Length: 596
Image 1 (cartoon, helix red, strand yellow):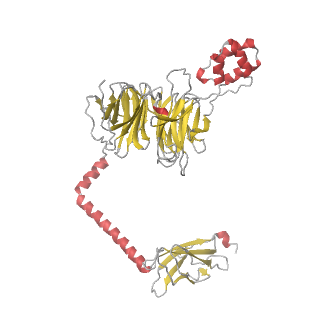
Image 2: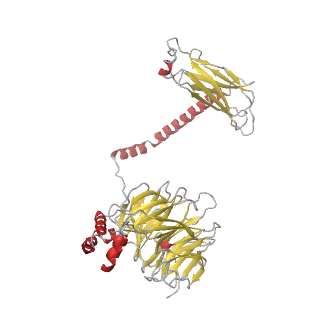
């Protein structure tokens, strides 16, 4: 086979003796020791069933295995997450095995979570109740009734019972005289989204998808379920998942099922919605940062929008084995990397072939991201257990697509853009604007200058009268806040004066309260203030009472418009006040007047 080499990648490692067999969903990288050195974490998937040795969870530093421990079963997904909001931010490794998730911190067992049990069928409960009390001669009939049920809807205890021989059943029933029927689904895939902020090493949420079409969003900080949803409204078995966003703001979850459906789940939805129906199940899927979903179907590569509309499709030369996204934010490019069965690895930007290279074996798993001290690294695992690591050159340029004779199917020609019809009113308005363009422009300019003139007049009037809560004098920059408390007829007027200068101290200030003596009575008409220091507010209280008549009524000439008190901030040797503010006093409660 002719070797095809790329000028954009550096060959960092090619270990033919690694003996690693895994899939893309069981590969992840993380900074295990919080030293910005990222290591490869992978779960081994045995290709020979049954395998004598148990599956392993391994951590690679280069081509060296620095941590190796047994797993209780075959893993379906490996994810790295963060739970700490403060430094140091120590990652957690989540490994899904069967119905459980095993969490590791510092590569030591940290927590085990098992998904909630499914509902047990009433028929199964009744059969087990009878098995415990019936004689052996009646076992055959009850077990035959048990076999009429769907095997996938049985509890693990019933599944084991019907698989035993007749001689072993009696002892098994005797050992389980008090049966605990539990029916646990299997976790088929997992992924992560951010919890709050979409930044590196910020806390994550774990998304769990089970074979029973349940979706759980878990808060890793307390291992509690934040949200539960269904994949779709009809019966389907999920297979692949991809997600983006944050739980607190907005997120999108794309799920592919074995029946060929592509479903989307958004924030606060209780069940997903089908957006695409494929001919058969997808072999790989990825949600890009540009809200496009890339789906692989054997020898086809298809791109769909978030609404399920096909944007483009490509016919590949060979079967696609795996795929992974290749985001390059420093270049403003979001690509996908596709590995073919013949050992060819290709990179696409949209439908354009950007780069390709040949490896000596079929690639079974891929991962792109940080590794070691490098930012952009492509990790490849072949079907024969070889481990390949390629580093993207910092000078790599993907602006020019490669020339290829491959047939590209563009967007379907029957796709029409929904353009609204031109109404009669729209046409008449367009004609009117064309005929009177000069007049319309002059009117707009006239109104604009009139608005500017009115704004200037108001500004000059405020500066002249000082009717504002801010001082117009640059030498004494102060700010006044007024607050009135009480139900009436007695109120507490609180004035807060603040020096908004950075360094200047304001002195020789006084507060003068001016009110209509027929309406209000103030305990003090003026107060001399201490020097105002920047950043320290000065609070002064005034007791204000309404002049109630002998019949416990408000003054006859008192209205909402004249229920005001003027507050003046004056400075020694200044002819006009620095601040002249108007405080609108509230009306007293009628029941309070009656108690006087």
